[in-house]
Image 1 (tube, rainbow, N blue to C red):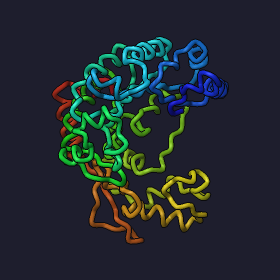
Image 2 (cartoon, one colour):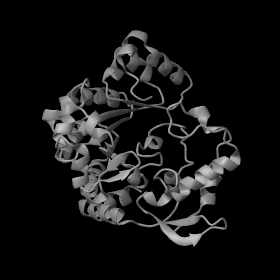
Image 3 (cartoon, one colour):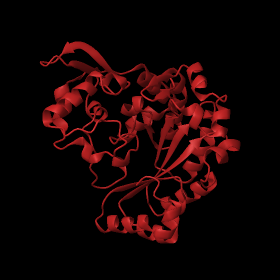
Image 4 (tube, helix red, strand yellow):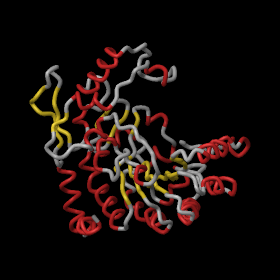
Length: 338
């Protein structure tokens, strides 16, 4: 459930009714929210004993800007209190630090302390991506903080455009994210790298949320490049056939998309699906071909159909992460626990 605690929820209680049904069937559910309404008496009574994982989202930004950026959201202290209440009921809680505003990374410590005191199980972190219409659509406070020209500000930091967004280069993000990950793991908190290119390095097997570690009897969609790569060892080759062996759709994709989706509405047959997936593999449709992800590299090999073969390597980012973790003692403690 994404942002299920809206103003209308206070009147209609639709989310509450759904949560009751999900509890009846012990159905695993993730609730992503910026609201502390989740600990209201009625909700807490239903959530207690449910197969549920609560994820609070908050922006990493200097305290004096938080209220202006996270408009309409409860104060950070209230979110921390809500997380503590849930944790005391043995309900797993995650803090999603998203977005991280460049230039405000030192505010991580303040928010992490709130999470640590609340016995949060997991932290995920993702930098702000700058949409191509940011100069027009960003709120005044955020735009002013980014020099009144967010796109130019991002370009000055070395950002490159991917699709409809500008993303900060890894050389900017890496030192901060490595520091955040080590701080979390040193305190017994699992960590997820929520930037798309770093998803392979997150704890757990389910994207960046580690929900597979905290939900019971839950299945997760693994017919994607990240899940495929996570199943491989360093040095393993990755073939297009590996990708297809996990799952291939049988029905039209337009069944699951609305009229504003960018993907053209087609009545896909299997051959058309294969063509679409091949285009993704080659980077001809979107940016997420395998070597977009840190740790995957394109080899000079091709398969029997002429499609490129990729390989999983230990990247410079992982080497830096492991070196930093070793100096903090995290790797030694991890070996002892295993």
